[in-house]
Length: 218
Image 1 (cartoon, rainbow, N blue to C red):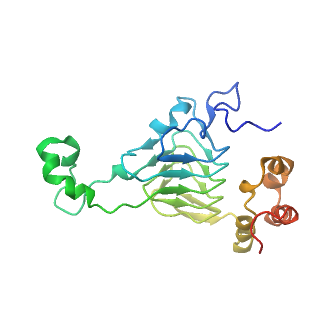
Image 2: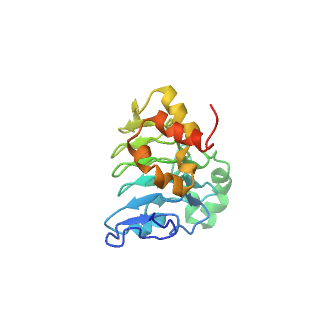
Image 3: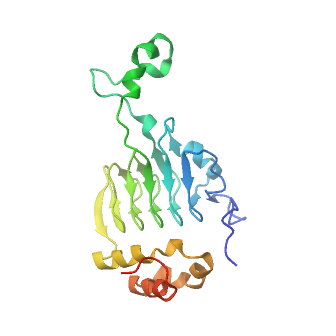
């Protein structure tokens, strides 16, 4: 039996683990199936406690099968302050005459766009993702990392600011995995080949995709 992606608590005995897709209500947050958040303190509040400053049109998009550790936070574009002048103080947010005199300054600020996370990404404890960052499929974000720039697929990053530590596979194997795109397979096939996905080689995963005519042809 496979877990039900529409169930907020896939492990009834462990309420700290939640599937995020059935919990998200904001149109600015999109999460794929089977992506989970693990937090002993308020896991169901991820949308409000871990997605911060989501005041604008920018979205947070997270793919399928991601693992997000406690304390991971996504800072959205609303956290940005104007830096084109002498002060970064956000006069506009306090309304009244301050807002009347400065609203155009805020609305003219360039946006970094959506924050986009691929599939099968693992976020370590208390990692932080800054606005507009794109994180590729299969990446690993080390505990405490502050991600300020895009992360290539299947790359491990760590530190503040986060820097590449190493690629998980060579370029050819990364290409195989991206073409196979196992996270897009029917869940029955994922279940059948879960051991290969977890412990097999990229070539073995690619062979499964080829047999079932899934993913992209090389």
